[in-house]
Length: 294
Image (cartoon, rainbow, N blue to C red; front, top):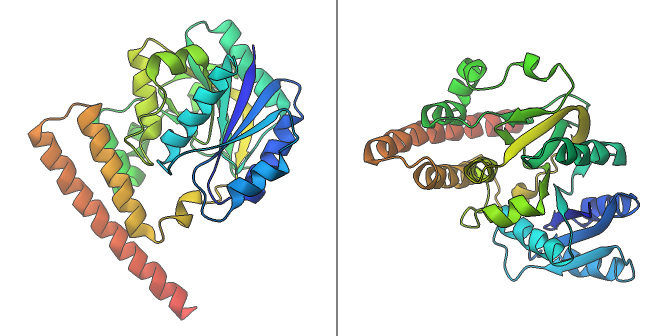
């Protein structure tokens, strides 16, 4: 197994540099690929200069900022060109140990159908975050898209905690995009991420592509990583409403291209999105008022 770590950078040199330096010291890692997604703060050039003489670290630059999937695909293609057999996609604000990497690698040996493997995600306070969820139906995805419906009916569209108590690798539908390991075979047969999506829904899309190609997704309950959530998207889209608009554009594309909804369900989705956007606008106003009072 020849393992590469892909780190997508956009105006986030501190986190990217810190993670790259750490994983370059792992004996399991053969290559670290930093993909600068057309940063506007000079961090791409700074990282290239910093790692210029680090033989294990390569810094490449995309021709445009095509989003999360576009940038990571560039890194995956580069790693494949260096004969890597497996690639770990890790957001710059993640932190993990070599022991976690070892546990993920072992799944590819014991589970021959594995296309993607991940660990359980913890936040900065060591709290367990939602790492995985089923491949949801159109109706279930609409429930998840609404803040209110997600809180009221979330139990019906997510895995029960008991599913992960055994500690053994568990086959799941989708894993969080902040960290996952994918095999070269799975990437080449699925094409990786859909580059028509800038951000959001990319996890569901990748899971659908893997499933269609006959690959399984696993999570290792006894392996953990931290995700700081530094908010890279906030550096491009300021405010809740622009982010929600981008999310809904990606959702609609996912519904049409991968769930193959017809006209009626598209109208239902559009109505639900309008309701959610109204909720978002109201919430943003309330937050602004509270901040002003304080």
